[in-house]
Amino acid sequence: MRRINQHPILQGLTEDESVTIYVDGIPMKAIAGEPIASALFAAGIRTFRFTPRRKEPRGFYCGIGQCTDCMMQVDGVANVRTCVTPVTDGMQIRTQNPAGGEQPCAPPM
Amino acid sequence: MRTTDVTVIGAGPAGLAAATECARAGADVLLIDASRQVGGQLVRQTHKFFGSSAHMAGSRGIDIARRLGKEAKESGVQIWIDSAVHNLTPTGEIHVVQDRLACAEKPDAVKTRQVSARRIILATGAREKSIAFPGWTLPGVMGAGAAQTMINLHRVLPGRRVLMVGSGNVGLIVTYQLLQAGAEVAAVVEAACDIGGYQVHAAKVRRAGVPILTSQAIHSARGRREVVGATAVELDGQGNARPNTRRSFSVDTVCIAVGLRPEIRLARMAGCRLIFCPPLGGWTPIHTEHMCVAPRVYAAGDICGVEEASTAMEEGRLAGMAASASLGLVTDERLRRRTGQIQSRLQQLRGATFSRRRRRSKQRLIRQGTEEWATADWRIYCSRRPKEPAIPVQAGKNSAQLPAPAEEDKSLRDDTIICRCEEVTAGEIRTAISRGARTVSAVKRRTRAGMGLCQGRTCEMLVARLLSQATRQPADVFAVDHRRPPVVPVTFGALAGDSHDSS
Image: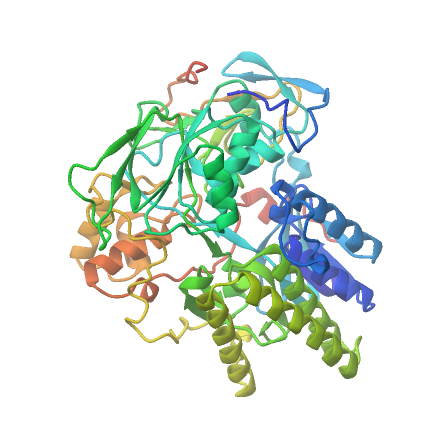
């Protein structure tokens, strides 16, 4: 996936203040104030967690903090809804896998 | 505790218009919204709106949001953003959790606050409906609204190649906006035999080379870690899949646009009477022509039946006017005159853009609300546990109009997930029903469906449909939103008053 720089209606993306986030330990650039989910999508990551029962991958579904599918572990806190939680500099984001193992995110597509 | 004349919940077009109206009448108004900016869904609408100049036709949603927000601020409305209402008490107190976005770094940023309001205006809008199919939990399957938020608000493409499910206005508009943002759309599939949205949107999509396939339903999405493809299937006149008509699409994203339903959780807590109106999106509070839904409570916009931003603004004005009048801030004469003007504009809007079914449903809603108001049998706001709504529609009448298109339901595989949070499958729910579960709550108690973090927001209607099929009763008999607080996730710390604001 990628950021939308050229758009026929919306203005081009301005050089927003960028922050560094760590996704499963890997540093990445994100735009200050954007939700974690969009920063991950921009980096090509769409698998955010694995479910407790069937160990199935989940990601971004409703986009407005209602479905709680996009939960990840953020700064040590589990079950954070990434679609409504803004990134902050130095934020530690982890794929949520309640089985205990730390599976890495899917490789960028 | 903050005391207000009027508290408006939801800062979309209806809420902003209502708050402005009250503030102009001289009320002390507080407007509360859960998101980070005002404007509701307008903030991601990059297309131009239809209608008359009175409704800012020709303007883009994003610009209308800015204008309405400015008007509200200038008229003296106090606005709390990042503030989610998690409870409405029987005495009219509103419990708010602020900055629920805070993480471990700044736990002190989570604050709960209480507001007492002489009048409440509910403008909570609508939410997207879901359909279940094999693979719908895979990363890459998302609501069309979610995709729209991603492209227009956050400016990130949700996928490279998309299959759009549903050809209502949301499906068509988001398809076009995905193209504008640089994605490919393989096709729009529509289970009904006709396109659901306006022809002008459909024509735009077709001109851009995207086929709209009617009488076709999504069959499944496939992939191991993410979506790598999807399959659609042709439907016969009865909504059954035709054999050997599967068609495979190589896509990395599936967007679901199968309609919106009124967001009625707070309305239920406020004791509003509900009616099941499929043309308006499902369960909707009945209301008077002044948008009154319960004593001291008004509602406006999509919560009162899914329509458009223009009608939402007008309903907001009506509610604001009526709430102000009930506080003695507006003379009866002015209320009558202004209500008349707004009603005639609403009629024009509904005449121009509405199917007859939707317009009639809206009229029925208002007629019933007015009648019930007159009989004064509307005391429910005082009781903690309002009775299950007496279902006013004749049982059986709506059975042909289930909440979502009857796609593939009959053949929905037993291993398909229904409750995403608790990972409960259709098979487990069918077993629970065969063992005697006859309500959504009974299914929940037996299977945990609807007990997860989202509290059944996504699955309750799907469970209701399974119940409906298994028991051969209309779905509306089963589908009732529950109404216990908190209606949004709140930490125990915040509830326990960790950082409670006692001012």
